[in-house]
Image 1 (spheres, one colour):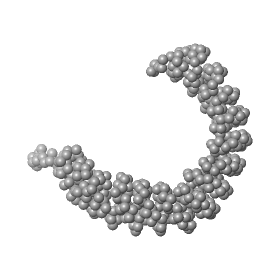
Image 2 (image 1 turned 90 degrees about the horizontal axis):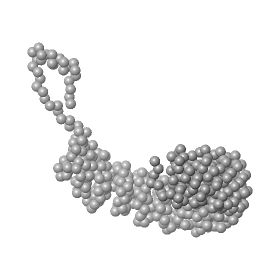
Image 3 (image 1 turned 135 degrees about the vertical axis):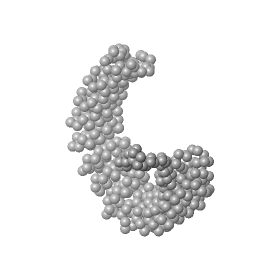
Length: 491
């Protein structure tokens, strides 16, 4: 609304009062015809059927590009695929926002009427627009345009070609194979890498000869991508010589790519490559350990055993864990030998590995670890003893109940709950008197698995505990033991 400034309004009123000026006749303010107002008018028509559709169609000819763009959106939402013939010409609109809105609408609605205008948009003279159209097609999985998109791998603009390869990867359609192969000859390394990744995504072993050629590229990133792809496509044995050369490459990323790929795609023929790669930096050695962990070659355990003595603590820890995961017969002895490692990371790994191995023979070592100066080592040792879960675990777990660390005590209670021994309820009842609520609740929960008279009487006594959480836990434990019906809730 148009308003007078206060001083002007006062002057008018004063003059009118003294008869010097006749009062002005009231007139309605002019209507707001700004683009924003016209868009708001269109928005208010949404959901009104044919009347709205006619208004939206008329607004497609508005002189303002923002209004035309909004009209496209409203019309597509209101009329659906029936609006395609009307929206189609706007893919050629001179204003970018209008052309973009038209393409988005057509791609989203689908249908025969959208094919020709979308193909025309793929020929837009602006590279950014061609790339955008490709991305919209990919986002909406309009696979009927796969060949139209694929043809743009020869587009003169590299950003368009990148968009094309990303789109083809998103399609994941075997028909993309020739386009990916063509793109492996692109002048830009980043595009060649995208093409290689696309071939891997398709699982196309037919690409292996071409990948061997790319493995000799001057660009290290291309060599890395090609080497990984050879392994991932199952070419470790057939193209071992190429991979052997890459495993000795001067570029660390190339070497690490081989190790990483052998972790993703284990191959028995890859063991000599891992042996060579084990001489690299700590990051490379860590990748080697991960690959050895899953290697199907039975000799992988021997290489892992060497890494238990690695200079890097993280590598040593990973090697201990990997040996246990492989169920290697050397795992128990090697883990036991590493229990006094200077690094708490290794000692935690030792405790965890011993729990995974599950041998009661590990309990002597765990008994020492639960007295470690580091709380994380103690907790890991307690968890391992509970995982082994035999009567021989009880002394280790009782030591855990004395730990100053809350996590250690809770894990000790849970571990006791896994042991099937008549002495367990007595220890759990003692733990239920802990000063920490979390420990008490864990002990009460574990008592629910026992049906002995003393435990039932103990739990019944807790029904009057001042702590509501304790009362609720006691009720659930009694219900679990069959001494009480399952409660719906506790007040």
